[in-house]
Length: 70
Image 1 (cartoon, rainbow, N blue to C red):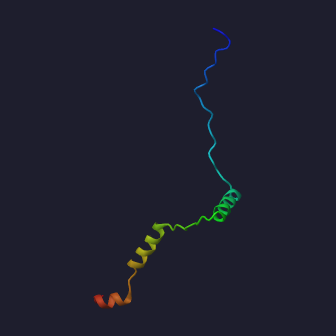
Image 2 (tube, rainbow, N blue to C red):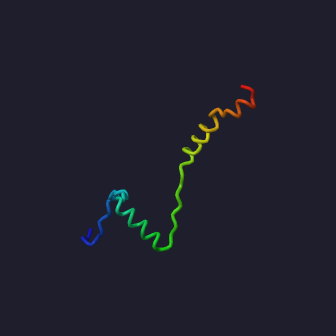
Image 3 (cartoon, rainbow, N blue to C red):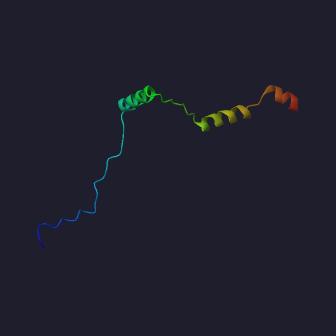
């Protein structure tokens, strides 16, 4: 075998580190996005609203009690 033969690359690839941005990075990215005309829409957790709705719905209303004869 001649020394000019290329060695096979190892099958193991280096593990890439996961992207974990810090608060400053997020703030800067947000500012850049808005400066370029981007818009940010707030997303509300639906479960929280649903739980509030159920709590309100299940609360006894004096008018309902009177009309239902309780």
